[in-house]
Image (cartoon, rainbow, N blue to C red; front, side, top):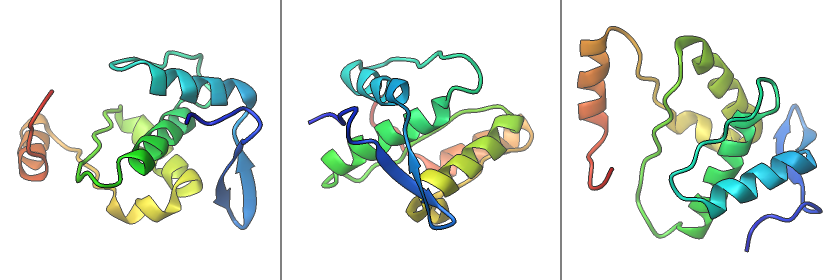
Length: 119
């Protein structure tokens, strides 16, 4: 069952309640319905939030699996992702591992962190 537009309540921040906008709910649905897809909305429309909500939904549906999620972003995007995870999925923030630095350092950290069954 996909999230419905009338079920928008999501993460919390400072005790307040965060809600997805209707177009974001549609974006989450679209991501869940299309494997190997990209969300290419304009800047500032909440792509990170939509992706996080799609991941959360997928994780909830596949809780019997043990898996890791890899999010690739620019150095400046790193802080956006950390902020959005803290706001929308606070239970996950302690599990986040930042992989940054020079290419050789990143490559070594990725090899240490991930095992690949499929790509």
